[in-house]
Image (cartoon, rainbow, N blue to C red; front, top):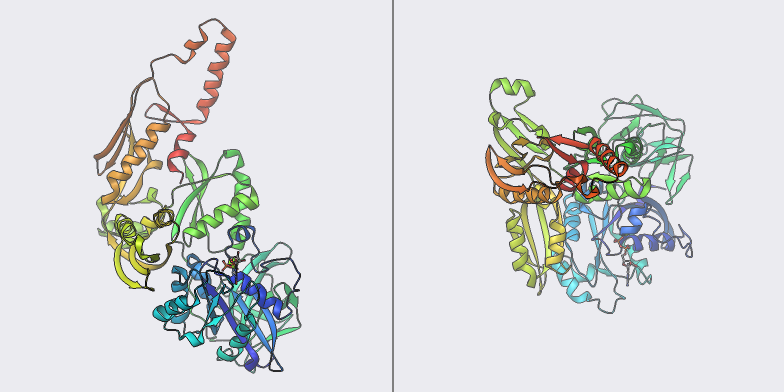
Length: 605
Ligand code: GDP
Ligand code: MG
């Protein structure tokens, strides 16, 4: 295939607007998969994707489409359906020249539509606007057309109207891909091999499968290649195209998208965004500027029972083999035992990962309240030397330096986009203010809906913001966010004390304005879960030595064995033995016996 007859494109859309359905229909129409293959939604492979109806891992398929008597090679690059994975969306888009922007003709433009549009727009991609689900009785193509004009400046005549479900007009999508999207640019088949690695996964039998967009030259089985970023070299064992399953070919060439298998041992070796090239070439120009994905949400993961530690370890190893964007570090807590601290790209990423952990490995795990990375500026030359830098990044509240050596804290910010019917504007505004949001923009989407944008501290939306928004708006508001740098902030460490002794694993960091409220919450939760002791237990939350919240657990008076009426001595012994066994699983703080449960209940999300 000459380069002029190749098109590389993605479909971007808000969740449920029909991306997977359209992808299936395109595969069917081009004979890539059979019509009656009841394998609905070929491109959503993972169980959690099927269950949630969202795409987590980008997947790719090559289609052959005959346009006016000439065959074209169309590479559909499926992107994840959520901007939480904007890193994956972004790298997939680096392999494309255009996108199909899909909008539900009933729901209209939503928050993810906006976020995805700007991602594609900023990369100068050709955008083909498509309105889907026009078969629905309550579809309103006219007003959705107005929304697309108001927000994205699309002319109604350029917007395709289709039904991915019934197949109506889907052929016009294929035609527009050929007509409107340009062929791959800056490709040269005469030059030595060079390609962008934009996705990878781990296959149990074949090892790492890397998906590449070939920019220059040709690649064949047996060729030797090198990776720019890792500096490692490999021999190609197998290569080919994805339809969407692997079809082995003798070679792939400039402009094409395909897979290579080359003895990469783990997916961390297949750095997404890396440039692969013919071994021996020097001064190779990178295809895309390489950026390592960086985790923004962290949480501790512990087995429910310590005996399950090895099983959890192997489950984590297998899952991270396939998702190299998750970072893993060992962590141990006196209360919860041996565990791991995992870093995720965003909130949905974390949820999806945990769900896979449970579904695919049956691992019962405790996930702690998520935290975000803070940048901390230190003062004093001695301290700077000790930590190795003036500015350090701390992912775990337990590792915060002493406040006395801290010059300034910086917390990660996001730009949040909310689209909602205007009747919910008031309550949403209050919610946003409560979460320390600062409004940056507000705009009418059409006569009854608005788009509001806020700058939020990531920490404030990390726990239950999305649920709160959904319930305030009866499910009608949509939300998405993108990273927006770090800002100076008044962060304090909130200590929890039991009878005057600090319990490090319950301590946390919060904005100064939230210390009292959060401290109160933890104290109340502890009061509920700490069993009564022979003496009173004082639960205190403190900031810099000052008490901000306090609760008590009243003393227990009765002897536990009293109910045995002293009669049955063996029963009495049994009870005492059981208590002793129970104690082994307890942690003693300030003479208070705390079951592991207490920590789980307080630390869990
Ligand atoms: P995705 O999240 O964007 O991948 O959306 P899906 O392709 O999973 O579709 C979400 C839901 O919308 C599914 O129940 C589809 O059957 C339905 N759907 C998709 N396209 C159409 C369409 O053109 N008409 C109708 N009526 N339903 C559709
Ligand atoms: Mg989908």
